[in-house]
Amino acid sequence: MKESQLQTQIKNRLTKHGWLVVKIITSSMNGIPDLMCIRKGVVIFLEVKTDVGVIAPLQDYVMKLLKSNGVHSRVVRSIDDVDVYCHKTY
Image 1 (cartoon, helix red, strand yellow):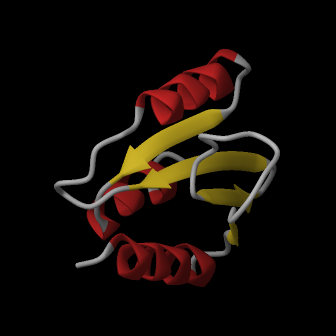
Image 2 (tube, rainbow, N blue to C red; image 1 turned 30 degrees about the vertical axis):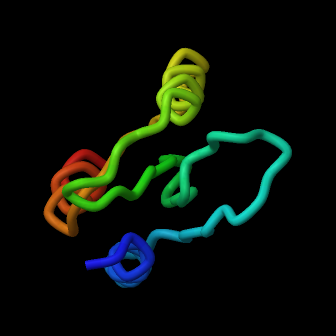
């Protein structure tokens, strides 16, 4: 499955469960994760990768920077990852 297809599935799943999901196409900050997800005052940034996808060093750095500022950020590789992280955690 392509990363874009997985992103669409994730967006649909989260939207179905009440999340506002924004696909970040361009920003003033390189390395920002693919999706910004908001629900009930919680903001989560998700970097979507396939099973064989590799996180670039800049993406890893930005995700750590987000976390160090109290922002939830996670790499997800499947719908199951999203179910566990977003639905059961928040």
